[in-house]
Length: 76
Image (tube, rainbow, N blue to C red; front, side, top):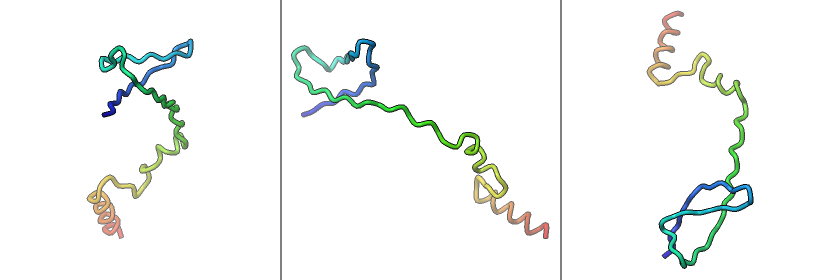
């Protein structure tokens, strides 16, 4: 059976990594696979994204949309 140990660690200044786990016993044979984590890409759009959902006709619920439509009909 294969068991997995998952840890996020930082590479040290001398390009070394250390893995510490109580599941690792001296003499145990292991295979190490390193996955390099990429930094998340910065969100595009900046303040334009904050405008989404802020305009007239943007409703947080069906009831809110119904109330708006009802009020618009009453003003005619």
